[in-house]
Image (cartoon, rainbow, N blue to C red; front, side):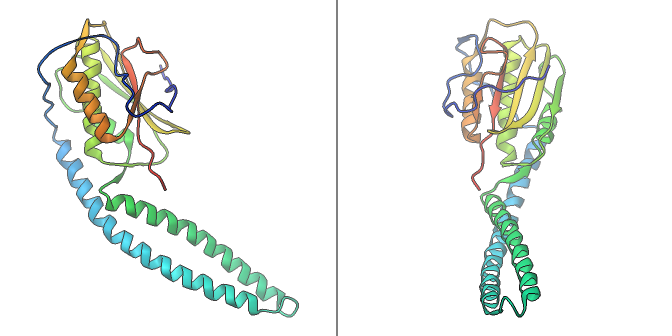
Length: 244
């Protein structure tokens, strides 16, 4: 069953994780799967490329500004009555330049993100990679949904938050049962819903909760109950929206 997330305006420090009585226990150590090293390398590559792309974008911005200045000067020098056809052609060229400006803005923005170590991620693809990792849970993981645009972030942080979230749901349903990861987007950005379908357990280890919260904080995400309400073994992870 597909469910959409509820209120996406809650504060990043929302105390909600999952319902259930907590009991003290040792910290849970999650060993990254083989895909983790690949995620880390991808982040380093993105940073290196981003630094170069950013320098090129800044240089291109100067050239575009100079071109616009010269075309505006030519536009003002053309007599409207004598050369109306030429003036229309020049106006069309300036319209094209407006499109170049829009593309330039996207290039500069995304290059800046890449220079910070972020990369354009297929969120559903990362979810599938994490779902394929071995674990102690008894049951399948089903990944559904897709986003039309990539999400810019760090793959290692997203993968870590997903692993801890899956562990959290696993404990909530007693370590056995179907788990579902649903990917989607709305006006508030992209989100990932993680839900478990199995017999409810008597609680969740406090260390598991804290590990998940720390992973979400590093990701700068937000956790909310899903449409089934706080009593369900499910949550929605809202991914941070990057400012253009």
